[in-house]
Length: 306
Image (tube, rainbow, N blue to C red; front, side, top):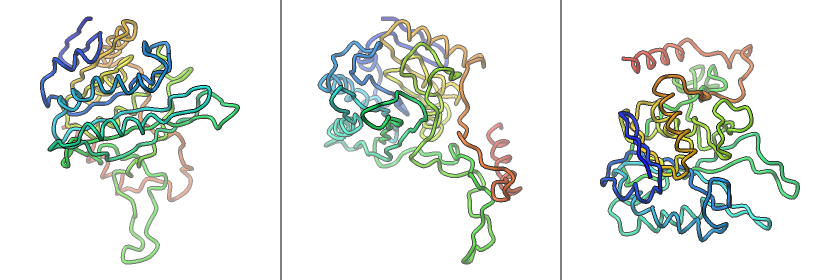
């Protein structure tokens, strides 16, 4: 076990259960992670069964709840446990575990969104439809919580659209800063020649935790990833001026994460910006950015700089 404590991040090379026990109550604003699916992947030590998946969660969830601030958020990204005979949706199991954890608590864990992350590439199946999505369960601790929608709005496909009837007929119908990204996120996964690719076989893109961090934490807040892998959540946290705490049991991944976080601080980390995958035809009038929207976005950018 080893630790690396820095101004912007605190990394722990060891079992996250040990790190969590040493952390103070209500010290974290957001937990973002993708836990092992217990399918005997190269980075997993556990058995190939759902019992192991549940056991690992039961070992840490009470401490995850304890270290999370009231009003804070948990974002748990999972896919499917795949066997030769069937697939098992892990988010169903996670939901039940989190739901039972919050019983009889004054600040229960409340599911706010079941976000679908969809991507274009992956293994091609021959006896079922190829899997092209995973899920993110967003829980809050208590009824009141942080949600900064304006910080994660995305460009409208047709920002020039106007109301065609009613009292607002002729007026622009969208929000000047962009639209709500919805609960279906199309973000390329990290495969082959992706700019963020490392040796980790199941690395998720920086855009996912970056979007969650911007939406669910204040600037300067604390972000925890108990299964940080190669440090993707940490990269996003530092990019967004948050403090990061990460745990990783594999020494190889820990070393890569440490380097990526230092590179992020130095402004040289490689990452794909959170931009739409497909762009509309700019020749169409409704696809052109109205002057009012451009002005609003420029003002917001200038305000953020100050």
